[in-house]
Length: 565
View 1 (spheres, rainbow, N blue to C red):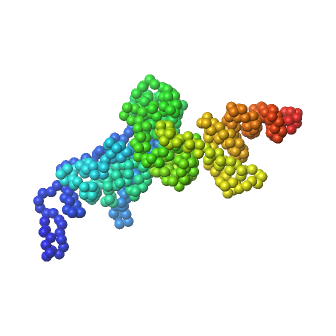
View 2: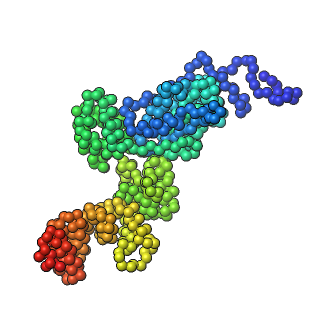
View 3: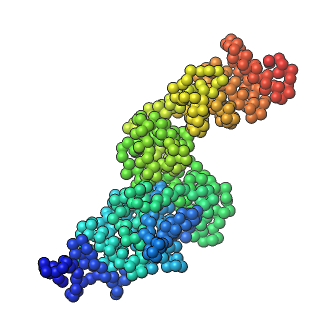
């Protein structure tokens, strides 16, 4: 080694003579020689599952990212790091393993150096690997002896990346698979930087800090779900086990109740495999009850609830509280404003909390920005925790705030649907904006009106039933109109409100006539006439008689119609 004296033209930092093993750290520079007699452990990829379906598009996209590419000068261009994210149990690891297996077996020999695989267990506090520990394992897999592995993170990172680059220079390109990372800081030090080595990362969070190509994994559709059930069961019991294909109706129910979550579907298949005489219909029936569904989706070595637990424990107090309150929204999705009402905060803060939950894939944005939805099984899980923390979260007050929001805003929107001029409501500048809001909230409002009375909010049911009538008539949502008018009628009768009962009967008759259920409409209007006449409401009686006449005319009972009019 040169002593670097002043008479040298430049300081030399090379090693000559002596004995060294593969890698020597000299300040910030690393010289690497690959081992010739020791085989690296570059085949640690888990075996791919035999049951795998519904992910062809995702596999193709990931393979396209992993394929070697050449630049304009013929040199290899840096491969993208691909980060796959999604809900716990969505199949991220399986997708990465299936993709890596196909990449390793590619006829063009994309990865002659093999694959490095590490499970960071990022969401398990007892098993979580730090980047320092993960690098130690990866360097061992690359055949670097323990005595040559430095202690610090930066030194290990430089050595690791230098070894990967040396493999690439010798035509032994490696694929790195980093599974189950919880943060970008946990995965980042394990990523190659040589411009040739490729990497796949999986996480329950969207790791937008890795400068990676992001892939969001969604649930399986119904067809893929039933196929997965059949594949998994036949793999466990042999091709003669045709319980899934023999009872497609039960298979569809199981798929629907598992909500397309591969973990749940595999557990359902394992449950059937463990009981070879159990019909698929029996399991479908067992999963119907919401309050025990998560209990049924469990095996001794895995469970849907346990998978969700690992994500839930990473939430802050405010995030966890909103997560627990979201199932109070009766409809399929919730607006940011509705979530703010639940949390008792402003929409800006609510949106921040919702975005964090979405990045953790515990909720997902709907197609229209500003609306959020939950996977069915996550909703059950969140609701369980919501009941446990009902006092802490002030759950009843949260529901009251939400229902009041729906009730008051619907009244304001309804004001814009009448033909007569009305004072401008503060909520909406004009009729078009009112209709846009009603269209977006239609499913939530209908669900709220239907169940509010059973939850101790009868005034919400009756208020929404009357305020929504003109909108449901205008949009021709007649079945919904019948449903909420019937719900309101039950409330008025329960509380002995005869005037309200007459109005509800009149509205119900209108909705029934719109769907050509004329005899039922006649009966409803006849009852309304009786109620209004009973306490002398001549205006209400006149409306009911006129509507009765229209219903009678529809069935050609003209003399009775004339009499009613």
